[in-house]
Image (cartoon, rainbow, N blue to C red):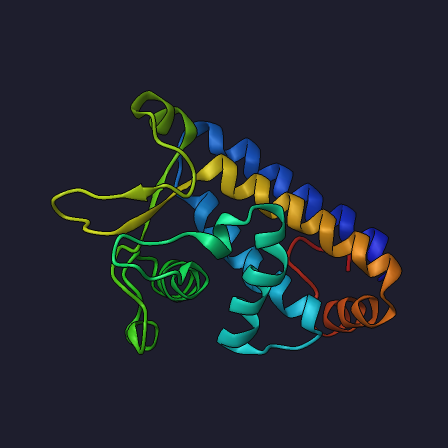
Length: 188
């Protein structure tokens, strides 16, 4: 499989997720989080586990929206990539919960450090993607707006495959991972 075909495939999946946001479901966060994990593996050409995921957030997702790298929690921590790994990947993808699983809590995962909503719900309340969110039950969270999150994943996909056209190593990494671990929904 070549990188052009892969770019079209992943862009189409991001488009499907964006359409799914309109009914306010939580599946877009699960699928988007799983897609981030897969994208981290294709850019590396291997599964570098937590380090690869966190590096992907910093090296790719933060280029389309610097807040993924620069977000600062009320407690002073500037560790959103780590929280994304522990809450989105370990929590949602592996435990179907916003509470990280036992491996995600150690050493830095914090319960409810990421809060999820959809644009309509957020707009009504004046909330924005990657703003600090606090309530009586959630002391220090980063708010994720589904539509913005998925749009950012779509932009990261564009960035990855645009870079792959100029970077033979990245292109090879992508092709190697796709050959070894084809994504869901056939055709590969």
